Image (tube, rainbow, N blue to C red; front, side, top):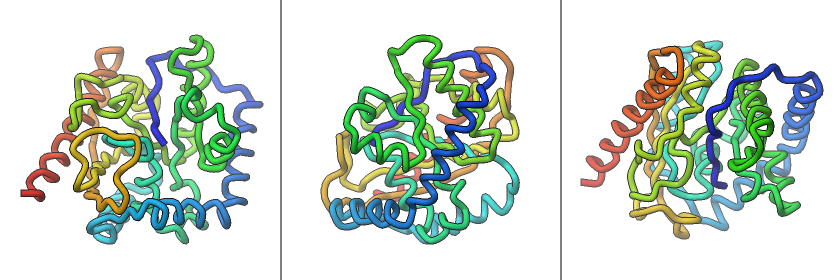
Length: 259
């Protein structure tokens, strides 16, 4: 699925009914994981034939990062090449059995309502897959509500996955010119957040696409980005650019490995 990160909006206190709604959504996601998870794996492993180079090594690296930074909410900050990047990230980073005991590691995602909220099947998949919809061209109140939900989830300690490019790259590489800065505001709201940058790219992927090609093998790597949290809108931009620095560093590793 293709995810976007919201426009800059001031945080508002999340009403009790929305907090309850998110808890209920998480509960139903967990209860249905016994069938939803295998379906999730089947679609990626067999229908798509997708596999990840050095997956176990990257998982071990991530486990080491999480053990070194306990009790911190986690923001997965990733590059964006295809419409199903968030699904692939979840699949490759987290062993399926571990999600039964650490369901908070199944990251929340932020899909565009017009892309994934119209079809009833996609709505069900997004609901069980821990998604908070955003209306890119919606009202200010709608965007504030989405932002407040994600901020609240972050304070609850759940993992959240975002794409600071705002959409799939149009240049085939990490595109800091396409940056959106709401992700920086999330760090301002909760400086305790641990930012883990994730670089995922198919070895045959030259540019953006709807889906990766069938049978694609992926390069995956992660890196901690210890952001310096600065105030104000300029601070949001600076925080976001620090994330782009880490993503570009990971991208250099990818191209170096290809050579």
